Image (cartoon, rainbow, N blue to C red; front, side, top):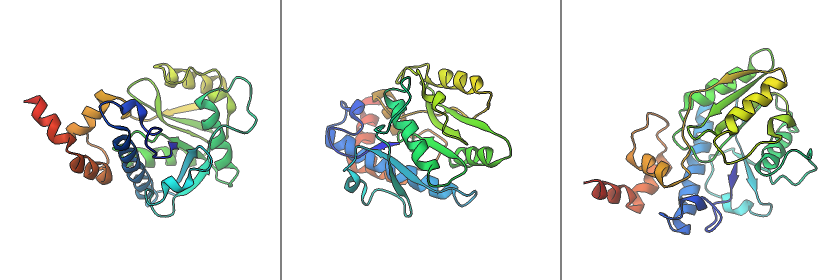
Length: 233
């Protein structure tokens, strides 16, 4: 799930400390790492990689920033939706519906804010969804949201009445899944890079996850890590 890496529109919650152009560059690096991570996971289990994007007409902004064989699918929430699916939920449901329309047996919606998410987590999610029986796979984020939601059908109820961008998103989603009678496979918690504190955590480089080479290369070019080190002394 991604906005085009365009200055003034991408990763705006990181401004400040970043400038809009820096935030867009970091967003593009995240996209490269996330799609390469998905491609790496596809070596272990059958996965096709997509970027679900918005708005329409911004496809060219993704050129050169995605792993090979990654496809684009529009997810701007524009199709007719149930009345209780609002806000970002419309984009999520649109993405799920569009991907299921391609004939896949399961869909994982993954955020574009976790470039260091361990590859093993993606593999675990895919294998859980490909196993017999119907279930939901939920990857809870440390801020109370989720970084991954996997399903075997596009259940609109999973996105209904959710207070998006709050600490209760993952819990509310779990409640929706239980109401549908679905088992929930819970993945290890991970973090989103969507504010100054989580950016500092990324810069510290202490996570035992995916190496995120594009993100780390951008950080080195930017000098942010050196400035963090000086400030901490």
